[in-house]
Image (cartoon, rainbow, N blue to C red):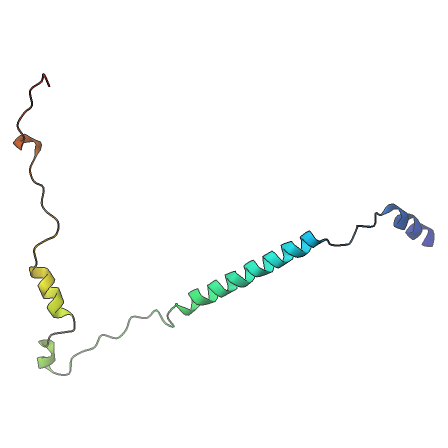
Length: 103
């Protein structure tokens, strides 16, 4: 058995089983990438709400509260009354004067 191990030791080159600086660099780059991915995942997970249940609708205590203006309601009314920013089409092609065929 010792003769077999001696023969195998003679046949293997010296570099077998040793890692080089490229392997260390690759390992460090992968560890940094994993650390950044874990950090990103934790920030995304912190943004997830604790529960996806719908909040309970708040029922007013008195009928007078039904008619009280809610926050932002004045702005919505103003925007509803404002003229529209998008103009309607100005006309069809039939409204244009016909050009002469020679031009």
